[in-house]
Amino acid sequence: MTALELLLKRCSNPNLTEPAPSGLVLENILSAAMAVPDHGGLSPFAIKVVRAEGLQGLTDAFVQATKSTTDDAFKIEKAAKMAFRAPMIIVVSTQYQQHPKVPQHEQLITAGCALQAMQMACVAQGYQAMWRTGDIATHPIVKEALGVTEHNEIAGFLYVGSSSRDIHEKKRKGFEAIVSYWE
Image 1 (cartoon, rainbow, N blue to C red):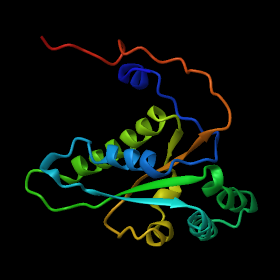
Image 2 (cartoon, rainbow, N blue to C red; image 1 turned 120 degrees about the horizontal axis):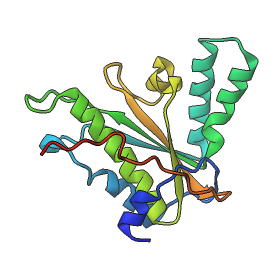
Image 3 (cartoon, one colour; image 1 turned 60 degrees about the horizontal axis):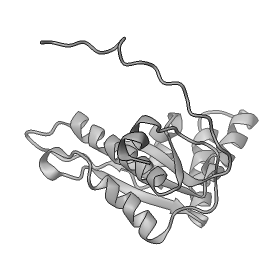
Image 4 (spheres, rainbow, N blue to C red; image 1 turned 135 degrees about the horizontal axis):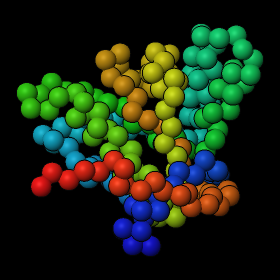
């Protein structure tokens, strides 16, 4: 697969199982995050790799956060399963820095680019990944459990593993409806 094919055929795969990447493959994934566009070279994000018993700790935070907002047994049960959708979750959070030329929104975009780069690095090396957020990403209990300070944000949870089921290539929308040229 060429680099262009990787970009044009990218699909999120929620069907993830063991094994998760490790060793040099994981190092490549994490290194991809460090190669993203980063105005000012701030590296305005933190990465936390969650696996093994860490998945249970993340589950505990998800359940506690859900229970703080609802007593719906279905939603609580769903929260208890979320972290086990994959054998590894890579959490990217912002580490906002004051900078006269790099506003916070650019720093958030850099964190998002890190997630995208890591997802692509997973696929390029034969693994799969799915980027998720949702209400749980903004919940103070989850942020605190992950060590994300109040003024920072969880940019996303990258669920990583091996594909347990092939997915069909999705039909892409054409770019024509959203592109204009100023010539």
